[in-house]
Length: 176
Image (cartoon, rainbow, N blue to C red; front, side):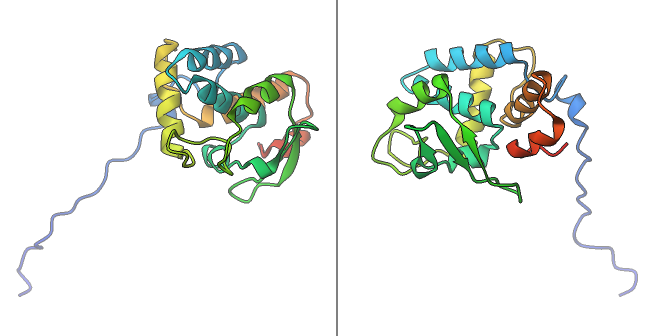
């Protein structure tokens, strides 16, 4: 019995390469985000919803799960406020909503408690957001693949470049 060879093969996974092997960088510039929003607005019959999703995720540094679970009860369109429930142990906060965001969100109001919904009326998923963003990135002919977390990084870069104190970025759930 001691000489018996194992019956199951050793199936070790290959190590994942560093992100730099997949993408040049992990953030988008403000102009690239604007191009994404404009391309999303023009793509298909759900363009306004898709453009609004990109804009809100970018301006508030939302993770894909935070965006997809956003409910109308968290928004106060009259006073221009949004209550953000952060995932992964982040700090809940209230963010201001400005003109472009308000104009993008108002037409989306419907019967669903969720802000971003499919044509069937169900909440969108993180997989939907990933696919929509990848397709929109391809349509804008960006030289690298786009993923949702790049919008979160872009938010942090924009706030830092606009002169916000790095400690105040915690308000947006950005810790480093």
